[in-house]
Image (cartoon, rainbow, N blue to C red):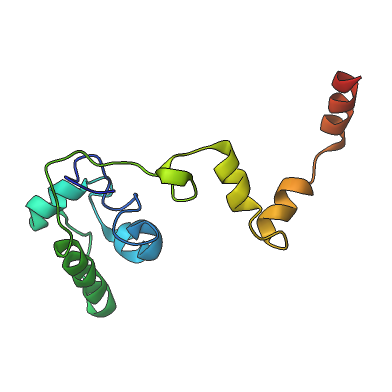
Length: 131
């Protein structure tokens, strides 16, 4: 949760959209020269971000959309908070990860957890340890 933006990376953290801007806008991220810039630095000085090339057409439109969406946020003087979407009250727990991964038993995560490919040597060692 962005409050003052001093602890949130503007490209790599989830703060403006459901995914980090570097994932949603990989071309913009690739051309950005300040990939580790904080949200408050961008907010305070839009000129603090530069790109290795001129932004034309779709890239310029995408960048303007990001800036417009950022301007809609209400920043405060309080510290940024980290929260876990899958946990109760935004707190991380192993149970919340398990519940998130097994929410849909027919999904790809369930298969990875319970039917993972394990090399034979690991299975052998686990049997020896259990006995």
